Image (tube, rainbow, N blue to C red; front, side, top):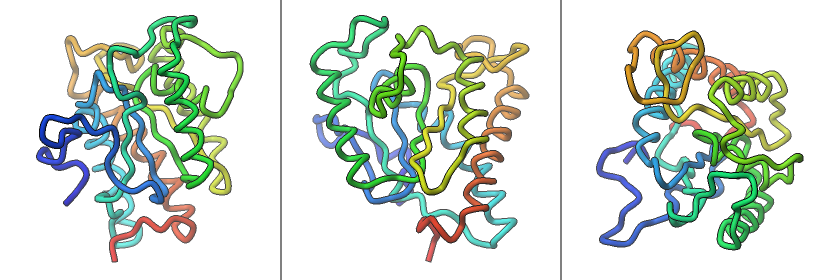
Length: 210
């Protein structure tokens, strides 16, 4: 079953699961536990664009059922919103994520929104450290373009996506007054860019339906 199935959520009984998929899969997603809907609202249409372009090129598709999806922290209540308020619980999560990244070395880690992106920066010890509020939508979009431009299949690539998109001159993280056209433009743009890198590196990623 696809990891995007509505029935395949982060809940198992009444216990919130922090991860889905397989850690040895080359593509990882990291999300804010406050906003699990990004898997459907953002990732699903981006993946649709990726799959379409991949299929046109190779007449095959990406096997999505094993994509590794992880909530950055196990409790939305400890998600920091400033530069300085990063508690011990978050530090432990960063250290654990760093350990599994070093062990499994995914080809790309796709984050959604400000907190997961800053979380991954701290996992990789990127300086200076910033608060989530420092990452506006336009800055995240710029970071996405840099990540694509500097993509290296021999490295772990951090690829930030927006958490929400509205109609403005830029892609903005706000749910109100959504424009279907702007949303589709964003999904097509980032999906095409990611697909391009996957296509270029087809032989280096064991992600294909067999």
